[in-house]
Image (cartoon, rainbow, N blue to C red; front, side, top):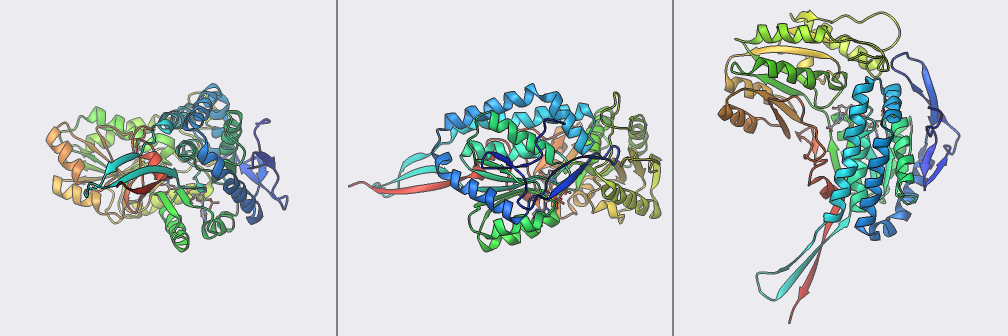
Length: 479
Ligand code: NAP
């Protein structure tokens, strides 16, 4: 912790907030303060924006190979420092160390992937239908970007945006979540060490998100917003972007259905459920929120899932053998408690968990609810905790209709051994991603994103860099 930067990163320098403000970073395992970091205000945000704007032109001209090699070097440094970064993430966010190490590898992979994409930005030359005019197509960076990230994957949500922005030649102001600023500051230090020029990435940690971000979005210099967070905040930011027509990528909330058909392999389904539900303590946009299980296998699936969930060890993420760390904060835990109480009031049975432990830290036990009433609040609210809510269904049309009966469409999970059914149901699901007999879809080489109110655009994959590029078309008449 001692070497971790705690100041703002502006124009390649570490600086205090202009008004000297700082904010605490808490350890969710104990509730104690880990350290204080600079708390930026609008003036600091303007300086960060200026630095990004100033660096943009030269950065856009930098050779793709140079940008690629900076990302590659940063990828290597991140992997070399896996342990250090994992401890930092566990300290500020709570996830068990094994999961934090997994996130370090996942986060680093975005830099490797986009280091490979940086040198493959293409253009084109075409003869137009009249046979005389030519079209020269080139791709150019969008310009300075504002990147806003959530607390649940503190490192990977940063690299998933910074990687393609660097590859495309965009400069950035990154505003991480106030609960987890340390991972982003550590990332900035790594990128500087890897050779990223001053001003290309600027990091403003702040407890005053609205005050800091709105002037940037309305000011006309920021050309793109990439946001990962809740749908409610995404909607607000889209409205702010409208005035100056700022381009957006929005990775928003989810309400994932997890469908288990009567012909599913229940071993696979329970394994998949453990990942889709318990990755990151359930604090993931991809978390299975509604388990629809065919009535003929629901009892056995519930029993087996409850057994596995009940065997998980809950405790501080730094302790050996712990599977489930604390939730991010007391507010997050209170929301989970309320959703479970509401479901139980409407008739749900608790197969395991469901009781908040005494003592410090924001712990909540792995919980399985069955006989959940369809009008329970957790059916249309992201639970964001280790709670599996099981409902039953009888036929395919019915389950597809119920799965799609939500304003969100990030991801769905389908478990069946029938290929026809697997493809048919996946195609009918209104979701940007589908896990077929698997509980994990995230992969830097795949386009991540949702439909409906789960977002706009995709991150990762071949298309991830497109979000940071504009086309320019040159009309060339040939006489
Ligand atoms: P959040 O409350 O929407 O916050 C996300 C980020 O936006 C934070 O940095 C937050 O800072 C900032 N923010 C909030 N209000 C703002 C405003 N008016 N102007 C500018 N910035 C503002 O979400 P969260 O609780 O951190 O994260 C959980 C949500 O993220 C869930 O809904 C989850 O599904 C979603 N998520 C989606 C994906 C995906 O790829 N689709 C991935 C991960 C998470 P403050 O906290 O200071 O307000």
